[in-house]
Amino acid sequence: MDWKLEVVVVPVTDVDRAKRFYAEQVGFAVDLDQQVGDGMRVVQLTPPGSACSITIGTGLVESAPGSLRGLQLVVTDVEAARAELVARGVAVGPVQHFEGGVMIPGPGGDWNSFVFFDDPDGNGWAVQQRPARG
Image 1 (tube, rainbow, N blue to C red):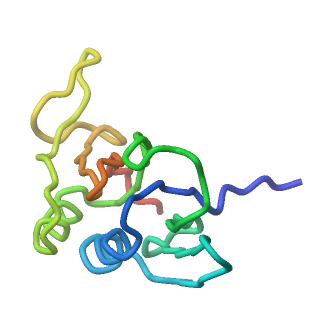
Image 2: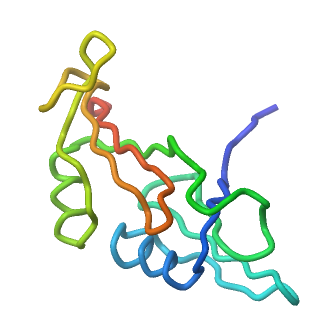
C-alpha cells in the first residue's frame, strides 16, 4: 500500500492575504478556493512540480497562525530559487549550510544548501537544494 503525503494544512489569520502571498509571491498554483459552509473556507495551493499541496482557510485546524515551522521545499538550484523569491518580494534569507550542527553562510555540498523564509503569519519554510537527478 502506498502512503502519500498530499496536503499540509497551514494555519493563517487572513486567508486572502496568505493566498496572495503563496500564489503571487511564492508562485504556488491555486487549485481550489471554496466556501464549504458557514465558517469554513478551503484554499488549496500547490508548489510547481510538487505532488504535495498546502491548504489554508477558515475552520480547518485549531493550530495558532504562524505556529507551523519546518515546512520544506526542495529545488535543484537554491541560488536561482532564492533569486526568484527575492524578485517576487519575499523576505528570504541568504544561502546557508550546516557545518558541525551550525548554520554557516554560503552553499554547502549535496543536500546541504538552504534558504529560509516566513509567510505573513510567521509559518516557517526552508528551501533545500538537492542534486540533479539523472
